[in-house]
Image 1: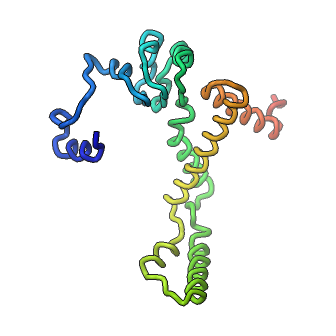
Image 2: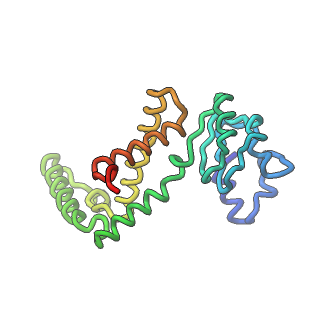
Image 3: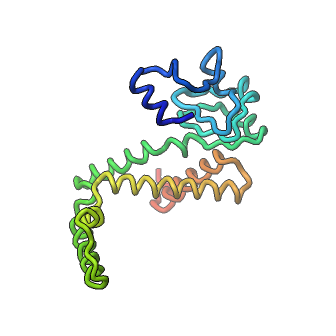
Length: 208
């Protein structure tokens, strides 16, 4: 299925009906969860994968985009079937992460990039001038503008989100491999350890 063509069809007709492609036929929406596929992304609805339909789910990888789309009993069934479950607390945490960035910005009353944007632009401009003198080849105005432009607030937020999510995924995978546990348990263990470390280091673990 061509996703771009599908998007254009939707924008024009506001429905997928009549699109020239093969769609999975199901009596109700929940049966789509049981369709043969490699990746299943349950979104928007909690507890949609439960002990009754979990044995019929054929996906090899389940990415939980909703909050709590899989019940604990169903999670065990999926693991016993050999499926890999990317837990909701890892997969869909991006929004909460960016909300944390916003909270930090509000505490400081300074937007991200305010203190270093001009400095970075000046440094990049000096570097380009050095390259031009060394190579004796001028850099086009379009390339110069693209390279010199300092990061805006959106650039820095996306960079921070990318770094946070990449590190969280890496740590979760490593913990799961080291302890021979599933990814949900690994993510939970990492989270508990971080909270305990913060509590102990701040002294609040032993305060009333």
